[in-house]
Amino acid sequence: MTLSSRFERLLQVRLLREEQLRLSLHQASVELEGLRHRLASVYADCNAASLRFMVGANSEDPTDRFSGIQERELFVRLAELLKNQITHVENRIHAEHKALVVAYTERRQSEVLIENSKIRKDQNDIRKSQKDSDDRHRIQYASSKKNVR
Image (tube, rainbow, N blue to C red; front, side, top):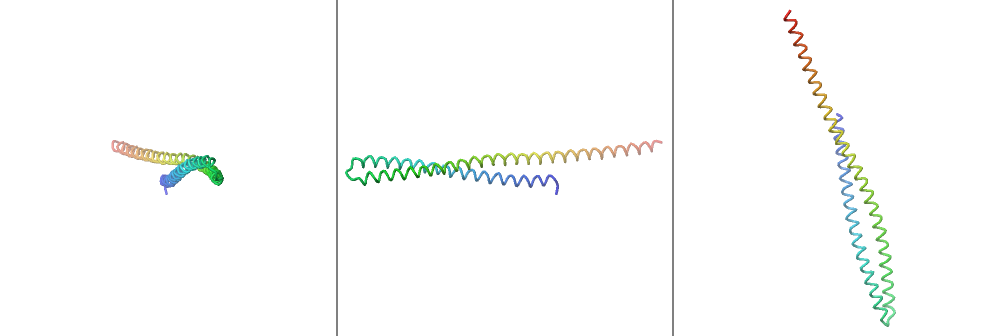
């Protein structure tokens, strides 16, 4: 197996790794967006529970006030959980983005190695061809000198 073909196989592996990281980063971004939407919804529900509590404050039935307080506390706890999940996903996205940059750099290095390998091979082929041509001319020159004598 030539050096160039090994570099090409390495490039294929790195391309696959980079694509996997891209997909994973996209999936995490979609997940983050969903969590942010859910958090916004929870905040809206929390505000609605606060309004129900305020309306219940004017009511004679204490269960309206109590249910409003409980609902609001539930939504606040849920919001905290979602914030923690968002932080976790953001950290994961950051780490995956770093890994993607590293994978991109490695892929580019592989591409440069392949290009350099092909250039070296072409240069060696040109040198060999030039050497063969020079050898033919020396032989022709030497044989023409013999014929002249």
